[in-house]
Image (cartoon, rainbow, N blue to C red):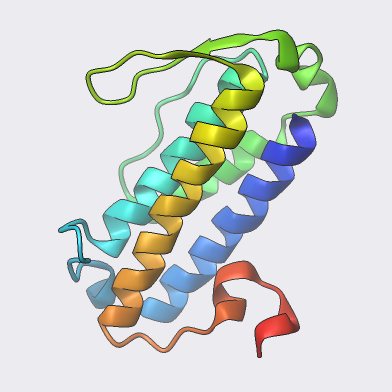
Length: 150
């Protein structure tokens, strides 16, 4: 569970921070196809990293700063202090979480792989797409940080 959360979220939160730097503040506020701005989508992704990793590590989900830069930095820092031992027994946990008006309870693997990771990447992808639609010159490598797509 540690390997599927902490390193993944830290990597992609870093990618979001780099994308935000490329985009500049004005582009972040252009609305995307769903009406949410890239800033809002990226903030949601940062929040999801905590909403997913913390319960799996047996921790309370912390409040994050509202401003996007500090929100990304704090989420990465909090993930950075998590250790593999924090996730011992995570697979056996039932995770109860709020999703809109619903409060589902899911086995940890279902919570992570069918809800948590897909929702994180959903918001990251919509933020990225909003910036592309706003004319920001981004490449696949900006999204994933890998040199394969250049």
